[in-house]
Length: 185
Image (cartoon, rainbow, N blue to C red; front, top):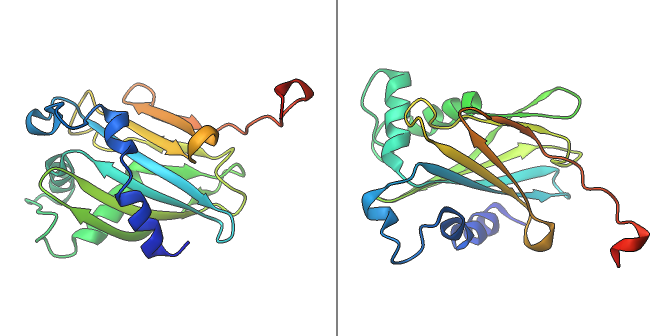
């Protein structure tokens, strides 16, 4: 899948709003009563990359986190070198450790920002796939004490998710057991 297809496919996904309870008519976007990020992560076995589309439901939270780090006001659309600042922030708050203990690098793909949301696109090299990797996701914990971050891996019946909170920021994506004879597969 090309980067353009990857970004296009994930940007139109309605799964993010459903997972956060922010569907039409919920009033969630106007009042912003919740503090969540949702990342959809799809593994491309051909490239060995975990392709991540991260949705931040209030871009102001990200601007505040970056501003605290940089010591100045940040505007996601106007601040010079903001993409580099976002990547540096992500490298500290979204840590992926391979099963061998090596930290995986994050590769910046791009972003889309609206008044209501910010989409951040990344690729993470995981040649052996995401299973067995350990993920630490502390995005925006310094801004919102009740922040909850979710990562959803795969699609359909093969989907798995990890939920990260201030009290529980690190999880390992467990390998799925091979189907047994009683699984009906």
